Image (tube, rainbow, N blue to C red; front, side):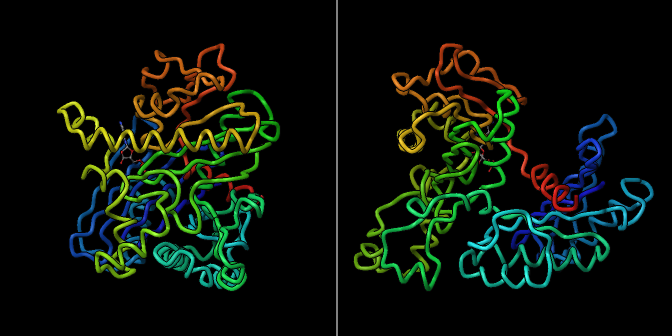
Length: 401
Ligand code: AMP
């Protein structure tokens, strides 16, 4: 069974074609700068084999449909031989950012489902519209394939009301559905399942703290295999310090800036999402640049690292209190998988709680899942590469039976 996974953004589409008979990747790539005259497509064919081949196109990509059409042409080109025709693709998995309170599992897309995703646009105004564009284009280009939506919020629908409610007047929940939803659910769910497999224990018996540290960052408390709390909230802005997003701030910051700095709500929102986080503190949002700047003596870069890792540590403490017993802490995503310094500083000082990092294992860079804790650590520490595309493809397969 061949499954195409699509992550459609406002001016880009990420895609992966996976053969589910052995979960091998047949093609993976990116369409960028949709709507620009210098559009760009990169598609890597058979990326996991010695016959790996990279196809690059630079041309005007008018809209999502033209972009997807070009990708399909690459895939069914007889020279590349990836698939004979469009009908070879049995299912298409769409990453959809916000499923609101309705969707708690991967869902076969029908007209009703499209309507509900559309209704959730106010909850994710930047993300759900391009996700919908991707779905509509795929429905047109692949009329025979089943389309499945996999929601970033779905894994967190098990969070109990006392953890998802904000202490605001209740009518805002009733009328506007303002509450914590949480995001990165596909990633947290995937690494939790991988962790259970690696520990050779049933996920339903495990309490985990999963830490997704990429450009976006979030931490999830998982009790008996289910999400019971997570740091991202109504939107992907709350919680940990991210590349350009602030994470937690005093909500009174908005009023303060409006009164004292003559900023309107759109400017404040943009500042918190695009100009804050690591970038706000030191001007850089890539952790590799921050380390290089620290090596050059930059105090601000050091501050940014300190603020991020302190916040990580603080939330680990909170989630230990939420869970009572923690079996493992799992690091994942760009920073979590690659940055030994961030991992070490995140768990630094947690030794009295039975969290003992093995410094040598942590420093050793591997692309495979690896155990980073000492044998006498009560809580295991793992680094597990996330694979959201594979997780989505598995979800599609399970929906299609
Ligand atoms: P992601 O959103 O998961 O793709 O992660 C992207 C972020 O991961 C980048 O902005 C970097 O901050 C970070 N990153 C990627 N590679 C490395 C690396 N080798 N060392 C440290 N940080 C990295």
